[in-house]
Image (cartoon, rainbow, N blue to C red; front, side, top):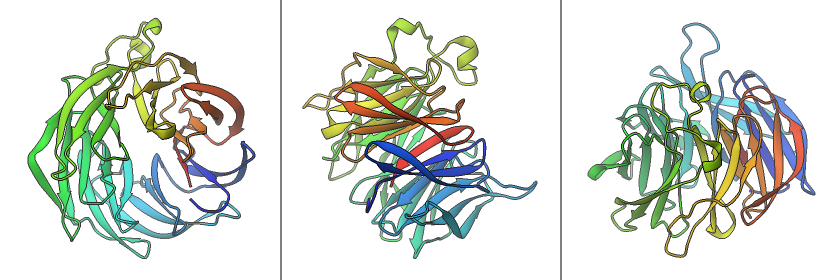
Length: 346
């Protein structure tokens, strides 16, 4: 991140991305770029001023794709530079690796994952494709040698090495099981790269996997509930309407300051909470739950962990909070757009 911090928010309902400038703990909306049909994920290369956004076809028969957008940090405008068509379905998660020369993607409805080279902002055709039901997220290791895909439909994390051509080579074993029916969704790795944490959609847990930093292999270490027990939420199942049934609907996960906490969101009751992480990597249940934007699918913390921005799928505003340990203080609500569901600092 360079210059004045920016916050980008995808508004899937409006097909747009809002860009805010963050000054003195205040969000100032600079611009809203339209024409990004169904945009619900993007990855930011702050060094090069590029944004890679997953979009759906805007016309009948037009395929989904990944747009390369140039970010003007002074005006907040996003200018299209290129597009990779995805005839097999759009991405639900995009992640960059290898200093911005690798793009990984996970497609939920299409049930496939990809690795693509990037050359001067141009996303090349996938050099590898993997397939698992309802893939929901993907992350590379910091050194760019490994990649991990989360399959909500199959309750697993798939693990791969990345070769010099960015091809995905399965580790042995190729997959590591999550608890049956948990619905693993999004993941983060710690700075030491010896642990992976996955938030689940159906059981409302954080799953802890230990990681061998040499081989890249994961091993399941345990699970901790991160939803508010006072809300009376039931365990969800695939295909059920969580709001109608008052079921758990876990969504996003991000590190807090100094990796002392893991922040998670739950959409049925629209809450945010921070789960303490011990020196041994173990996770404890949150103490406090905060109501936030309606149906908070996405949120993000500033690089130093002092601020949090949350978006709601049933809201047209985002909330800016000051963060102190596991506590939040609401500083501002700012207009963004319809169906906001993805937030990143840049």
